[in-house]
Length: 363
Image (cartoon, rainbow, N blue to C red; front, side, top):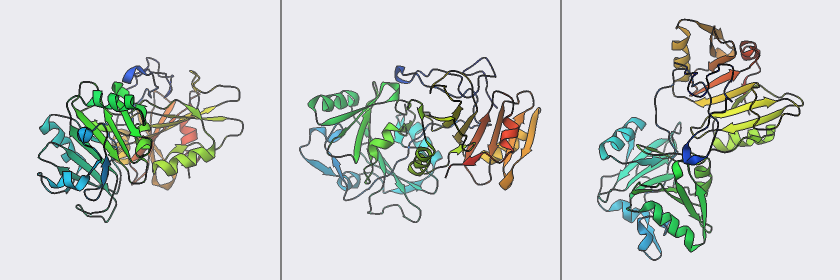
């Protein structure tokens, strides 16, 4: 169901209705309409890592009192079951059974989620590329959850000692990483006696956290939402490459500013600002939103069967749906894609734009 009352009482406000979030007291925009038939899922963050020959740095984690470093495979070797591939549902079930957050960095299509639990309560989720089997000795993106009394204070103490960079998180969380080691980031939240460590052998751990991808089953998630910016087509293409997922827009438009807005739950909005309109304007303009959504096409098909919904055929086998009572919004999806697109136009031309062939993935 499309909930159009969550952020704005006016159905003409569009995705940029200007709702304020309460994460960490930092306001950010949210779209006023959810993706069609969006299932309830926890925010997630991508995780991967290594179970052997991986040196986690000494920082705010459990090894805070240890001089030097620890080889991760030693921690993983002691107690606990062997590593195994698991589904998202199994991670969610585990979080409910243990009664505390399990951190990760969200779903990543084509990857295997490798789970490892230790007898000391630590839990590791590693992202294995296609073809890599659980138990591999290679290093991959990994997110660890450590039991740690006073985890938040420990991160604060590390930052006070110097030599570390601070990242503020939503829900008043805090993260830090050593200026000499961008491979590891430690994060904690007030009142939660568990700490997260994000390891990326390619040095992208800090970027992952800053992008708001750190999340947890059964706990807080995200960093402060990025502010809206003016983005050139080249910058939009670069973002697509960096995120490794599609972002849709309505194509180039001479003289317009492309305003880019991203939210904590991985939604991306591109708004077309006429000449002279500043970034972050509260007025409504043509906006194309891209929502991560497992089974997006099937959801559109189901919605199209409902009362007042207009079914719209699209090129490439895509399908759109529009509420006949609100011509300002059209939701789109394509077979085999786990992303849903929303086209909002305050002048009521959303359907015309959606069927014009202008809505394409940036590439």
